[in-house]
Image (tube, rainbow, N blue to C red; front, side, top):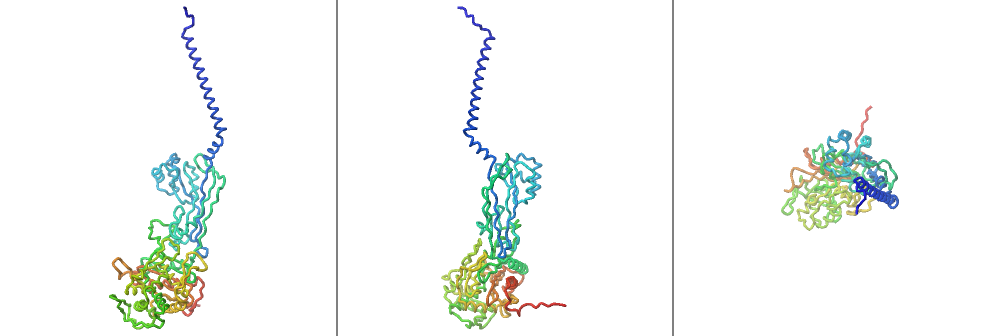
Length: 573
């Protein structure tokens, strides 16, 4: 049979083209259907999700820094305040697009070494947040911001400023670059001072820069202010006099504490050498140490009034008891010595002349536990509870380990150690008629944590005995306070080493109170290693006591009770 269908090449090509056209048309219809369904899915079914995603990319939350509380003295004078600053940060991933010339401009504005930013990015290339400058002046930060560089941002922060500098540096302490307390009262009261950051919702552009504030989510809550017991006027006076004494006596260091005799408030606490908390470059931890609170020393003869008070209160001696001394006094296999042979003395003259032999005789009359308990009640070997970080407890050997010579040395200030703050606190038991006060660095009206250590009669009797120390017959006429009666005790203690006590280095100490009948202030002074020739407490530490006490009493408007000793002012016509 013959096939008459057209088998020409042209007919075959037309059939192939028609098939492909139908296939493509069908394929396009399928794609269009998928796209329509996808659009419906995105715009209808998942509409809320997309809105949230869009908002998430355009609307964000940022932290709002809170003011740190002010630290102020008892008169309301600021000792630590926060000032607004800016910090400059970059997103390294975005910042890579910035031209080298622009980078140099930023480094020049911020006084950064050339290449500093590139080095930071190279060290941490995967970070999305990298500080390049902290605590920048707001005006300077605005100049950087005006450059409108990709990946460069500013952040509001606060920087701590200390108006009194080194005068109160050891006491107040300082914060780090993140405004967190590191030392001193800034550290002790961090929780109270730091405040609570706020939050706000903002709109960011495609480069994640904040372009508009939308709303405050929560307001920042400023930290609470801290009102100290410190009187900055007395603090400054004490600082200058201690600085002068340490310099003139070529001493290693010094510390001084002023206490309110009526309620235990710390009115001043200073140290030398000092440091300025506003500029702390190249300083190590030794400069930051508040020696008055954290360092201990053997107080030497400044503890003798406590031995006399303990012996009087316990009935082991009377004010008229007689002590026969010959310059040396054997105790076991050892010998106790006085600087001179004082011969026969009554109780008062034991204090006046600071006789080691006299107080040794008293100590040996008392049971070891009795004297130990008195020392313990006075706060030796016990924290004062001031709350200052790193405060020393001191050390006192248990009475069960005392031998006779140990009992002797404990009576004139060896075998125990204490801080200047502890020594000053112990003197409150003599100044406030037998009542030992707690100490406070915060302003308060009364002390609710007192302990009676001595009877009022004993405390008053010993104060009168101590008044003789500041006379020509005593060891500290240099401590006399013009216009006021004063009482105190010197101490000159050899420094201990790993091989015993040295004969060349000393602590020069003086602790006392004024006025005698009704003490208002207590001052304890310690000068470490005076090396300008004199090293006795009566010649090195006593003059500091005199000058600070005289000035502090005038500042507090305490009426003179010994006007005949006031300097005469001459007028010339």
